[in-house]
Image 1 (cartoon, one colour):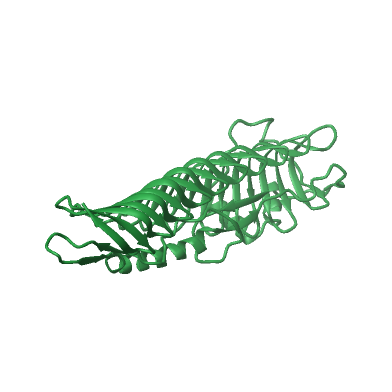
Image 2 (cartoon, rainbow, N blue to C red):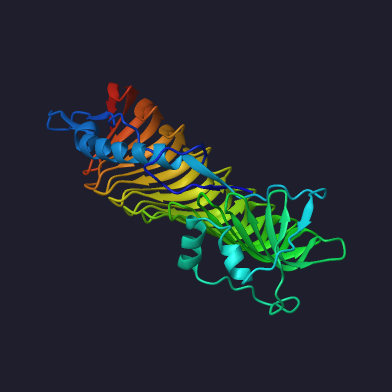
Length: 365
């Protein structure tokens, strides 16, 4: 049973996971204000205003991208559960079933059992007060109920040779019903099983203290689930076959968050991303990037409303300053480029042609 947890960690991770939004490292273009009626020309540099905060945001977000876009795989599986396994009935009497089982477990499993407490098996099958002797099999030892074919059937405990331990219910030789599996090298799954796989509701405790709790299908996150990480990061939302897919909310410990649509572990559809300085973007996303129409609001009150492409202002858009100045027109790669119009606080309008953020031709109205 392979599971993926996409929580942010400092350690390297292995598989693709959600890519966190990163602001552009490049400063915003300068916006040249055309001459006013007084004949004076002023230049408002968005780059100077935004450079420091964008560099800081970019550094922080790049770190998150590297961490959250990778993930660690922890395997939960039943080894040697084939139908042709050899069974050897143990004949020597023992002083206690529990004592004999304990000698097979390792220190990690015992530690996890103490931490988690006794396994709540819920509704029982058969008389658990009846002492049952261990059955030695090819890959481990089973103690519990069996059927006429000597298959695990009912309530029982299986301990692998490496010390991994499953406790719970079985049906015709396979884990089925409620059960708990503790790996000898870390990781615990507790919940519903069917056909030797996690199916239904369950919780997985990762050895780094991350947790996934929610719906499962054939050993995969499927349905609604919640991932929590030791650093305070959290995802809550929909999964399809181990991938974040549908509506969800991702929150980071520093206050950054994304709420909206996911597709194949990436922001895709409509959503809102809020940085820790309260800057925000609400709009369309494609493949983890701002793409389509959206509104970007800066923490100081500046706002861009318009089209985006590949995470940049691109197309037709309006940029508004807190003092009322605004630019309406074309953008290419985060810069004013093409036809546009400038409007000052006093209503003076300047139409012109911009090239890579610079005003080339003007006509004042």
